[in-house]
Length: 188
Image 1 (tube, rainbow, N blue to C red):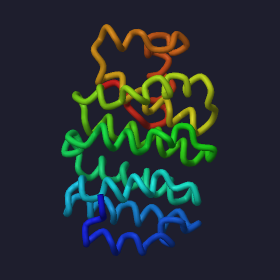
Image 2: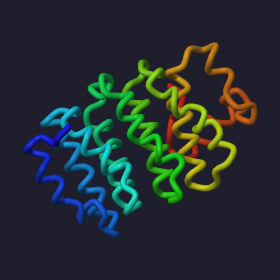
Image 3: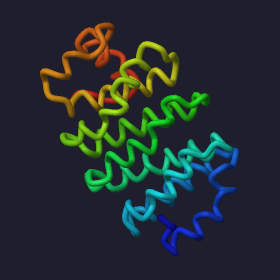
Image 4: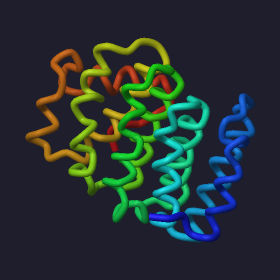
């Protein structure tokens, strides 16, 4: 599917997506979220897929995933019709070599879960296992991001499914104790 005319100019912004300065990339992500709001999410999805799956630059992948996060924050429940596509686009970030890409992917999944709450758990089917396993394998900031994602995904689940999470989370009490000092509120 070719890019819409308005997005052809976005292709010329490759150097902005790959800049080393995180402030420029964050501002770019916010600007693209506004573009998604104006043009509609479907218009941006082919561009986001290409950016998030870039093999050349981890900064481009990071910025693409950040655009999806900012879109979820800006548009809220309007992401629901496109939720599965957005999750599929960023899924590869959970397996990325760069810790920053893993972190932003988990935080973005949390933002998407929060925006789609209380619906949309089916859209996260492909990443649930990776997130659960990541809570055992990751450390530091990446672990905090994975726990945040779990904290926002659990309320989307049916109660009988939510209790089958990893045993080491001690039926979500430990999760609540860990994430509250981090400034998040996983249980609403």
